[in-house]
Amino acid sequence: MIKYSVLLILLLGVHCILSYSCCVPSQWQGSSLSHDDSGTEFTKNYYYDAANLLVRIDIIYSDGSFNQSTYSSYASLTQTGSEWVLNNLDGSCYATGPDYWNSQCFGDKYGVPFVSSTNKINTFSNPSNGITVITDIYCLPISITNKLSNLEFNFFNTQSYISDETVFSAPPSCK
Image (cartoon, rainbow, N blue to C red; front, side, top):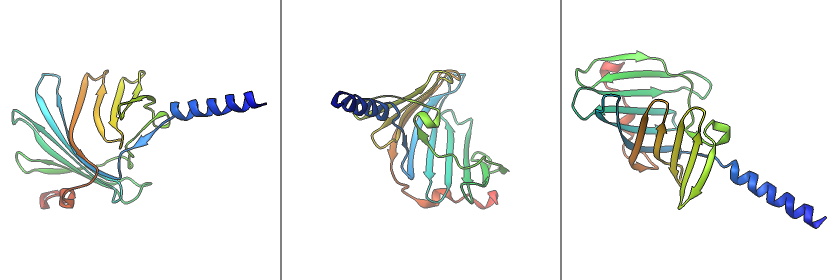
């Protein structure tokens, strides 16, 4: 009987380890560096606020050919929100429609299964869609790779807070 109890505890422990998941902090910001298909380098700046259901993402090409900011806001978790895309080069802005709120979580139940955790670094990967996510112990992204799209985003300056709440305020041309 004791053998079976120990075996059950071990199996539950292994299951818990293999089914590990995490979500980014409720607020975070950071940047990533990547390259497009032609090899042009671009930076993305991310601002994520799950408490207020707000997201802003800037895409800035190093050669100056492209610079846009996307402002997304959601009324609730069950409704679609509004999204504005600002061309920072000419000041034009247009409305698009985002999907529903998307929590930024990783693990088996989120479609990117847990693989390993070493040196306070977590690895999640789904070979069928080519996505691999590496996070720190707080679930802030370190890198995201999509092998099928040949994209890799290497993150830097990630912080578990928003340094300036006004980053979510779209300019008047976007209203």
